[in-house]
Image (cartoon, rainbow, N blue to C red; front, side, top):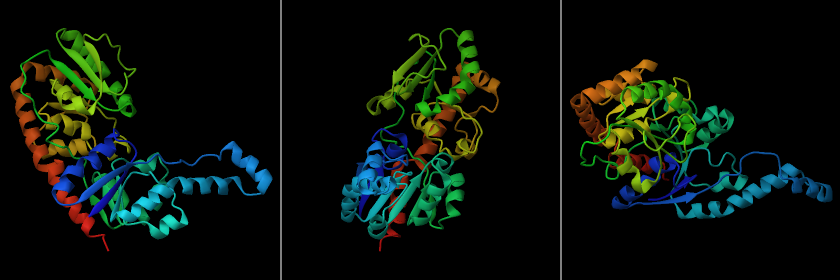
Length: 347
């Protein structure tokens, strides 16, 4: 099979975790995955020049805008003839032209968030109905998709366990770690009181935040509150610097659609994880003795203190966590299942 993966960015977590990382696995199995980065034209008012053109030609500004959107996608449409399957990440192409609808190859619509809440339910549903196959990141997301497309399958956000793994290291400074994108900075408010309390009571400890930019929730002094920019090349090394990894979440419809990827990153590296037991996080915790649940604000500082004072218990959970990822959330385990699903939609 020749698969075209449509993604938004080579560094976007959804693109990396759900599509890009399967390239080597597919190649080994005798199939080819090629990724193409596509920046969509979002719906917006037509450009000013389209109104001036309307005065000269009488052609509607919206028709002109739609024509240019179609032209911009023409190279992508031509490329699709060379592939058997189009594997699309989220709502990159909210509208299809007449010719795209007629000539598109089978589309696998992949989503790992409750995107209907912020990208327009009407557009998401339309895409789900037209897709040959839906890949949902968890049961909550699959339940929504199955209303509109019976060919819906749960494909969790998995980890390349050959790239994220425990490193041998000497015991060092107790480090509380968080890794994530700026869209998740809001959840740092949940842990801020407990983390600051723990740091004040344990002057030898530190907080390490890893992201594309510094979150506003903390004052960074580069000694006890440290920021490091994220990079794929250093991700494993940085996570292994953590003594414990945190994944706070509010309990909302949006967060119930999240796929626990941050938690799985910690687990893959053999790092004890403290998480809000929301959505997939709670399911992973129930599956085995693999982490710590913080359901209340005071739990964060209490559990941090327990891990620091009783590292043996935390180490046991971390070992269990790595084994759980290897067995259930490794991309090497998921790749054959994905390929089998692909085979069912090729004519």
